Image: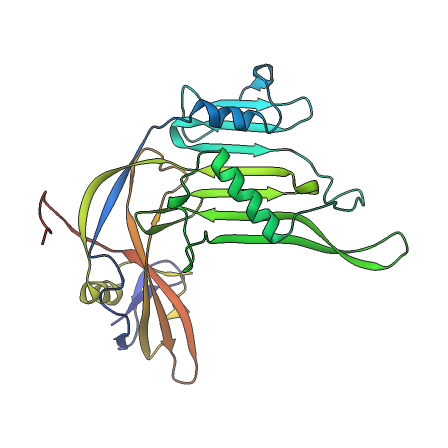
Amino acid sequence: MVGCLSNDGKPVNTNDVKIAWAVPTNSWPSTLWTYKIVPQSFPPAVISNLMALGPFTESDKTNFPYEMPFKDKKMAFYRSKEGAELGIIPAYGWIYYNANESENIVDGKYPTNVPSMEKAHQLAQEYLRLFGIDQSQLVTKEDGTSRRLRMCEQASRYDENGKVITVTNPYVMSFTRKFEGVDFVGDDGVFFVFGNNAKLIELRINWNGLKHYQLYKTLDAKELMAKLQNHSGEWVPPSASDTIDAKKITVIDVEVFYRRTETDYKGIIKPSCWLITYLDYGNYITSNAWQGDILGQPLRPGEGIK
């Protein structure tokens, strides 16, 4: 029996369905750590580089304009006379900068010298070094280079001669963090927006200090299949129709990840997993993901050493 969620959120069982496992059993770590978020600090050079973005001075210091989910005695917020904003919360590795420049997208002004993908990536690499980001903790592609999400906002406009042209508005580049080979999902990482004349117009950094907390044995394939059968976990996105009529579910991949919620700045970060599946309905096949725990029993000191 396979479980899923009904429209009212209650677990329901589907008809008997065959579950097949098509994943190498060694495709995820046999042990994983949980991590405790610990306070940290930014070196003076990093603070100086951030202040230079505005530029900002101590006279620009003011109160945070909104309530933060965490507090730090050294947290600071700056607003320049031109409207640029900079927020820094060192203990939680949190940085926010916004140049508050809207010239790229309003008043009919044409974007000027917005960087190409290659240039934006080069600029991002330089800023990562300036802001003290450990690039060994960035998710990489198979060739070893940093994997990044990249987006550019494009629009069709008329030039001075009435000809339709395509222009590029701000270029977005985002880098995901990993820790000891496992990706973080959510907001952890670095987010850049580049605008006119290749200027950095927005920056967001979430880079918590992490400390090993407890080592666990991970669930094996048989245990993960049992969770899938016993509706322990959830389908992403949750929907009763995802599995209720499926005749066969084939697990084709296991993806392990860490996630920190917006309110979990002092707790323990635990790994979870996605089971990537094919759902066979007889006359068509769809793909979906099941999300659930992957931690088994905690290991005692020295246990697991071969």
